[in-house]
Image: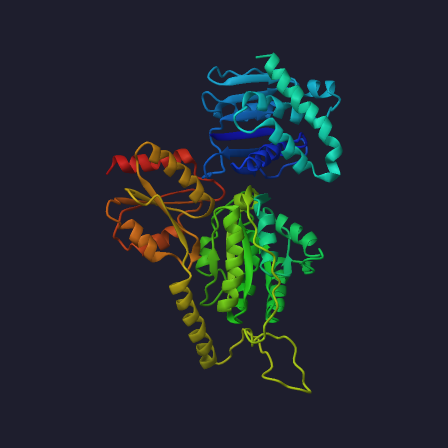
Length: 182
Length: 361
């Protein structure tokens, strides 16, 4: 298994954080992982993305040219990464922020109204974790859901543990949405 | 110990502390600011109880390292390319004064203020002497977060052993990336006057024992400077004979050998793994120490039976290429692939280049 995933969105949407959740879960399952953020003159509202590799074997390059999965939290991210997805890969689009449709017919595309779903489960800031849930439903072979929740606990730490429940709800809501809309 | 997910810059700082470094002087610059940031908190924790000082400039920071190192303690500074340029006078002085310390350069794109993304353009500066005078630094180029941790320990140990500054040449990707790591146990470093008789650890005028510590980089007379150089150049020869480190990868059936260092070597490794799956055998010789450079190992790899060409890949205009050429000394065909600044060579480009070389064989 070699998963090369790009999480992309606006700064402040928590895209780097959900990438960390996945990397941390991979590590907990004894897999090899790398997490590489884009950095530059970034700011809140600017673009932010991270590349996460999860593999059974030692990882050579942490830099991804052709991802097996892309999570596009907004339109600029979709435009930037849509064409890079490997044929047969996964493209998840946050349809709360863009009506744009993908022109790719050789990849699995999922449109997830992440903000609306997050609001429905009472966690309006949890759109990023809803999208991560959608990813988990489409990519069950990468890490187990239970491990991912453990990773969320680890990354949130004691100080932010109060946000765990809301995020677990958001995660399951994202998974459910994809299962019901395939 | 269980592996932990850690960012390169934080891992570098923690590794320094665990290897006895209790003095850090620095100044913020992207992409290494997380190193001082980490020290600024960690140095004041109970199990460390060290010194973190944000200097008013890079020049001050390197001279603070000089001052601390004079007393024999383990001291370090870190910066990124333009900041490392500012430190060069201090680095030259540290070499002349034979002071052990560690300097971390998280390389970004240059020249000038350049870019803030990863770069490899400081190879010449690190290896051929960025400051004035005939000196060398022991230079490590880690290609993973774990290797950066391991290099920190070696850098402090070798700096002490040979009384010379050591440098870690990482890059923006190594510093910003998170990878699973294992950290060494924390250890305290006590200055042992028997091992560091030169260190200025305090002199009691009323009860004079031994000689006053006189740490200097000033040798006015030609003959005095000759004596220093006899020592320095002698030390460099010993380092060259004993401290070379490299990784040889997939060399067994190699027809083409790639030379690369740091992050670029990891990109090349992806290509090598992919091509191996297609029955195309490519090996790699990756220097871990840029100085001393693995001349013998590169020569041996390039002239191994079955090898028909060498491809040097770098994120610069071909700086290490000079050393690869010296190593091979005309005994093998060498091609080069590289970009300057922060333009990272891609898997696709390296693959295309290797396939084209293979075609022409």
